Image (cartoon, rainbow, N blue to C red; front, side, top):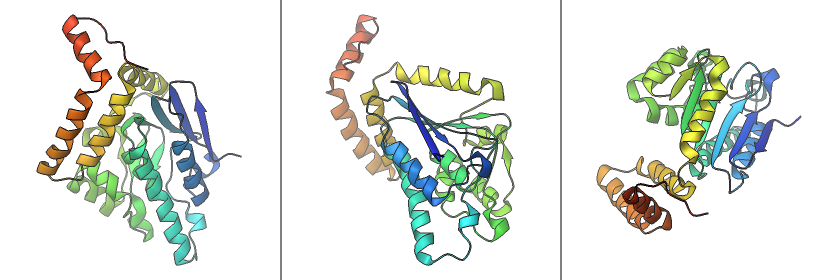
Length: 253
């Protein structure tokens, strides 16, 4: 059985965690498969949707393979996890997490790493590592960048779950809908994205994630250079001309 499924319809690549009997626990093999699926998304794909089969999005690392292992194994496991999170930021397509059920520990990390998140009302989010003596140190990286220091520390120190509404209020989730409306909401979001230039969105996504790690002055230096190059692109010239002409733009292929 494939641990990660991938389907491409010409516009959207749908990547699905497929280990439902283990609540999509992120084993080393599954992380490597997920990274391969992300890296292999076709160039003409405009959006990547990351979802999961079964009752949960992901329960985090597979604890069953983490007992009495060597330092080399743990290093390999956490390296693979970080590679996936960074891959999500490096692919040019916006990555939308489709979340239902629980997203805990590294599963919550995976949600936080995605560019956009749509969750069903039954979704729950937590970093419960403190409860089992394994602090959620790598999950804190994207989570803290999404919801801030104090709220992240509350999740980390208490290990308690928050519901989807709270996750949206805190900034971990973009939209919350009833479970039977989850796919329709994602399709609406996809439609709002793919009507624009894919090349420009890729440039903007890369600039966004890069400037997040810079101080304000260096962030402005970076984004000034990005906008200067962007302004000279055919896409920008067409978009600005279309606006002035009061017509819909025709994006270059």
